[in-house]
Structures are given as structure tokens and as C-alpha cells.
Length: 387
View 1: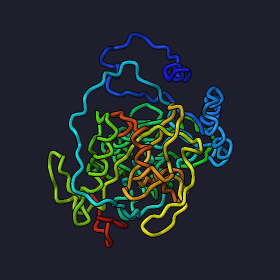
View 2: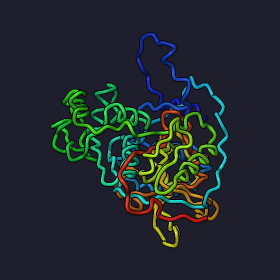
View 3: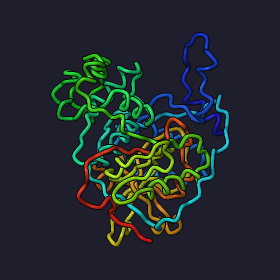
View 4: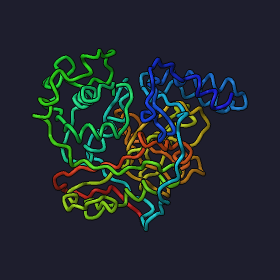
């Protein structure tokens, strides 16, 4: 079965009236059409492997590893955009003079999206919180505000740009205030493994003006788009350059319209990425990895073959050109996931090879660079680096 036929299996039949040409999305190669659970993804992958007996080794890995994956995780279900018009990359991103490894210190506990398809919102909040000392943003208030402001259910799939735009327009509510029921008394605190929520729990029970009267302005949250960076190598170079685009515990925005010294108080920059996510365990499995002289038992996305029907989002907090996985996949990205303390305290690795073959070049899902103005931080923003 061809890839196009596989994609047709997950298309949704939508009843609609007349479509305005201006509403047709021609810029994103792929479209999010809903969510898919881990169980559903594994079953679809098993069916795919059974249709391809030549992938017997992949089937063996699936049988050995399928029980390791939490069954209630959700991912974006993605299809090819039939209206996509390819455009050339706006520029070729060349690598700046940079060390062979640079890894940020993370100062905030990992978030846990649980059984809801909220990875894009959680990766945004996680990146922002890790640039700030002691900041805790209420996930439930953020999602309730987004649903109320856009009349779109962001609890079942979203993009990082939508989260950033909503936060910049309406600000954020701290967890301490959100937990009192300020935003919605019927669902005050995000519960990672809630029963299915009703619409009344997913929206604000206050109006947006009341929300903004108590929210903290997030107008100083900036992002730089990776939009239209279709070439994966180009995107990888940009990510590594952005991680290195720091100075004296702060940030220098060479590509921002206006530079500001306020950013010298920022801990670091965290590129957010979206990618094809497959849970067959020849793709994602524990590896023993030497990280800066310490052996870590950590989950790694490494290269494999699979159907590309589900996507996931994380943020990048470092890279190391020197780490090799499976003997021949050299170079890794350090990822902070939104699956709680899974893997190594919420941290994962992804080989450059996996990224290059599974990067999602969508202007809506894989492009944000996030930073936030914060207070001075007492220690270095880097955990380690090597020239």
C-alpha cells in the first residue's frame, strides 16, 4: 500500500458549506486532524508490519517493546495537506563557530500531559518556565483561556504558535491562583489522567476581561519562526545556532527587529520542534549513554522505518555531536518531554539521523524559539559544553 493510500485511511469526512479561497491552507505540508492514542498507534503500526513481512525484525522489536509504552498517551493525528504549495527555504542556515556540545541546565520539573493531547501547549509552558526562576503557570487556566478566546478545543491538539499567541494576548495565570478555581471551579487543576472532560470544564467560567485583570502579562515572550524551513538539515543547523546564540547568561537576538538589553536576564533559549513520532521500540527505547562522563539509562529516538501518521512536540535544551547511538548514529539532540518523569527525569535524546528523517516542516507545528524576561539567576545557564 502506498503512503498516499495509508494517509487516506485517517482522513476525516467533514460536512461544510462554501469555502472561501482565503481560508484554504497552502503553507503547511501537513494538517492536524485530531488525536491518536498510543494503543491505536501501536495497533495501526502492527497492521502495517503485518502487511510488510520483509520487516520481520521490526515486528520482533514491536512484540518485545510494545508493553513499555503508557497506553493513554495521545499524539496529533496528521495527514498530508492536499492544498500545500511548496516554497523554497528563505535562506540557507550555515553553522556558526560553535562547540561540539552544549547543554542547558533545566531548573523546572517536567510537565505531564497524561492522557490528553496537549503536548504543544505543555512544551510551550515547559520552555517558558525553564527560562524563569520559580515561575509556575497553570496548564488548566492556559488551555481554558485558549478555548474561550479562540472557540477551538486545544485540549485535543494544538500548535506552539497558538499557545504563544494566546499567552501574549491574554497573559498567564500562576498555578497558585489557578488551583483556587479562579479560572474554572469545576476543573481548577490539570489532572494528567482525568476522565473525559466536558466543554464546561475545558473553558473559562469567567470572561476574558476578568481573566486578564489577574493575569501576568506575557507580551515579553518572544519567538522566532522556523516557518518555511523545509529542509531538515537547514532546520537542524538553525536549532544548534539558536542554542549557541547566548552570551553572559543571557540572550542575543540577532534576528529580532529590535534588540533589548532586558534579555541579558534570560537563562537560555529552547527551540520547540514537532516530528513524526513512532513508538515501535526499535524507534524509541532505553539506551545506556555516556553523557559528559556519566552513564545515563535514557530513552532515545533513533532511526527506523514506520508509518508517518502521528506527530509529537518537545523542546530542545542541548545537543552533542560526540554521542553515538547504535554504533553509527552520531550526534544527538537533548529533549525535554511532557510525559512526566518517564525516561531520565523527563529527558529524552533524539539522534540527528532520526530528526533529519522525521522533522515536520510545518509553519504551525515546528518552528518556535521561546524566551522570556526573568530575574537574575545565580548559576550558569549551561550544564556542560565542549569545544
